[in-house]
Length: 557
Ligand SMILES: Nc1ncnc2c1ncn2[C@@H]1O[C@H](COP(=O)(O)OP(=O)(O)OP(=O)(O)O)[C@@H](O)[C@H]1O
Image (cartoon, rainbow, N blue to C red; front, side):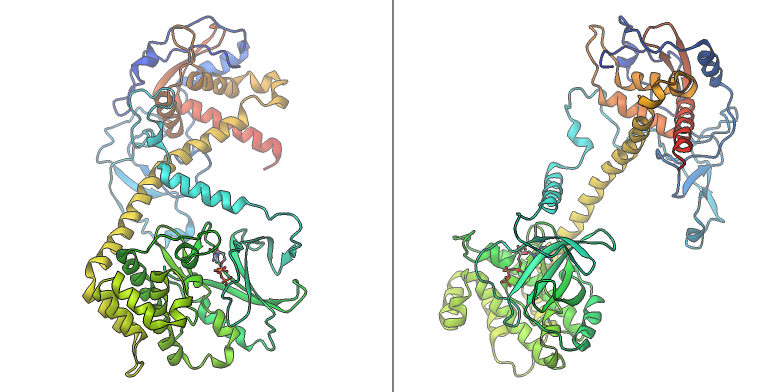
């Protein structure tokens, strides 16, 4: 199969709205052939007639598989108008109507209105491929940016890691299985309310998603009442808070443990593991003032939101703040203390004041790189802080750690931050909007790629099926024969020296025209050069739909 046979595209001029096949393709000469694909006379007869006769079919979506999403259907002719091209008029400014509407969606979108639209050129790849792409040159522009790709791949990788043997973890906890320990073994932790805690990544049987399960060792739940606060936390959503999903008790670890289920962020780290000295990170780099402000702004926003809901975090320290991207913070373990120390839950105003002090202590701890000096000698810690950081940050820390009377609020703190450092707040806002823009751009590329992958999957299902290859009626006749020749036309071209042509541009253009089912014609030549078929992309598309339909019928799907 690897020996390629050049197949010449047609001389026929394409429709004005469609780009011509790159010249390099039309210039490919026919080379020596390998004996294969001899179509039967019946097959040729069956295929040759398809060029002009079209039975009107329902408009298919531009994606490879059957349409489920609504599509725009032009009232005038377009590459999607499968009613024939005799009545074709210029597509520009054509009346379009919203069609293919799911019944649930029809209430949301007003499908009674039709309004002028320019038909989308679905046969084009966006962005347009350069004239010729050979040997992966420039290929990167069609895929995710390598930084995003790396981050996502690393996140995937970390999710696939399996626990070392011999841990004897429970096979199943409630609806969670495949437990993997996330604790990095960096020494005794701070735990929660004096209970040691362990974190596991696990997969839910409910939705197949990953979650972070925190086991609070030795905590005995004497009544269901403490779990009532979980509902309040479950409703709380904020970009700087790790959502609490549920809590339950278990004896699967051969003791009484409480399990708190939080959202899972692959490859997340704690602020403590980044900025505090530990076995894995003995010399953390000093924290620059700007980063400390960036942290502060995010934490204040989260705390303010939580306090506004009448709740308090009650566990703000470097181990309980997750870093889930570059300088992207989320308060972790929210709701845990309310369950563990439920008797004290009602003193929310006191806890909120403690939250603010905890933010001050957190800043000091991060600046010093250890918590022991801050607790043992706060004056010394503050002296160090004032030598390293500017007066504005000192003022905030002193305010946070100072007298609680009159009562302080997170809103006041936010007001101070806004007044002192509006530039940092604006910078974070800009950064998050830009990050959204960048991801949308990246996603746009993947929309095109995803579309082609679906199409290629269909090709894969149809071509070279061993069980049907024995049946010459299936693989060498009619629709399937055209698909085979088309596959050669797209992927197996050779140059005048018989060398394979690896031209991504040609592949992308052909596949998109196929996906859109345009009327443009192409000439397909068999490998033995004995037969030659002139078909349109629209017809090839119909062949694929029909062959795929045959397969589905075979499998009973
Ligand atoms: N929701 C989560 N999603 C992903 N990773 C998490 C999540 N929560 C914790 N982790 C990871 O699990 C590891 C242990 O987290 P943990 O909260 O126990 O911190 P710690 O400093 O070890 O705390 P402790 O001192 O209580 O043991 C860290 O690497 C952390 O990034």
